[in-house]
Length: 461
Image (cartoon, rainbow, N blue to C red; front, side, top):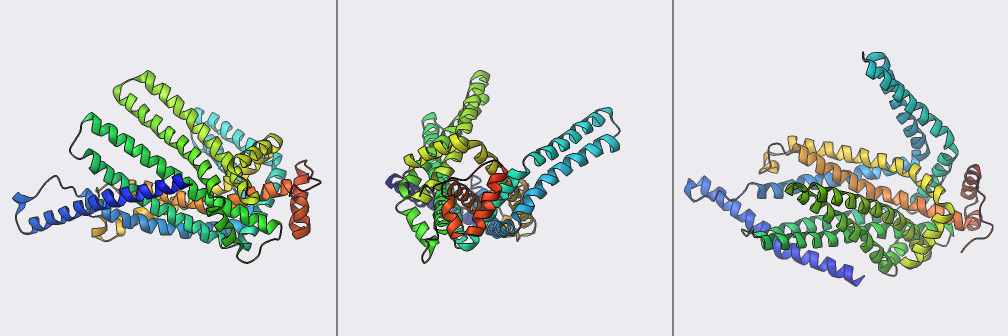
């Protein structure tokens, strides 16, 4: 925990000491060059001063607008899922089936080609398989939709969870800007006009160190939200909440549970940084024409990426246990291993169905945010795009999509965390739910039986 706090202090110090100071110096120099040009003293203008400095200043306004827009749209989408979650899950399956069927029809009866005709058979086959898959997992869709509905009810009951999510969004966005300023300052501080090998090596070390600290903090912010949501779900489940359950759960997450959160987050951040290093080395090997080393590094990066996804996925359930029971990270990890040994297939299928819906929502928010970013570049005042490349619309659109997608992921993380908490709580404490919320218990128990399971006879807690 103290190591994470130290990393925050170091990142802010670098950003303020080097990033902000260098950005102000570059911007002031640019303004001086403009004044010389207006005064007709063009022979004194330094051609090395780039318009990109102004672009960096003004493009921040565009991304800030996109960030605010993504927050609003993410909130609206979350409300839509709360009200129409089960309907949307079924609808998305039929949209996919209908899409394959439409492609098959077009390929067979519209396109005049033998290859397209055979491709049409393939699309119709995919549509048939999709429908068959839907028929086979209808009961599991019903169970997933039921857990999602209960999760949404918990979120409705503790609506302040969205304030916590918004707070994490703001902190993540602000810290991202601080990280960018730190990177900017490191570039000018270390590299400057020195292109020596030692300077470039120091620059790489600094970048990846800053990246590790950045990824660590982003993981911590996200996991604080998971633990807070799980704590609120536990209080709702046991009907033990007093005044302000969200505040209580959040305070526990940033105090008592913060050590467990920081430890697990560091593990994921190290793996993510290792992946970035391997990709950097692979790109360097490709540039040098070393095909063998490039292939080896890309294979290692692929293995590390798979490990990262597995660890990150398991961490979500570990932090659910932390939020519900207050376990340490190692104890929670052992509980998760036992959980997956006994109910791993059910967990994965349930998550695939729910996260299919959440991913669709992320893509919708990202696309809308990207569209807004492009429109702002086209329609904004001229000074907003001063210093930007005339073809910067595509870049702004891509970055805006990433911003929107990332913000939607955090907002939908409230629903996802609540859904995982509902699954674990029902698996381990169904009897308590029957006492506190009998209607919800009956719905879950009925859906649980439809997939061939019976509930636990005695509660764990």
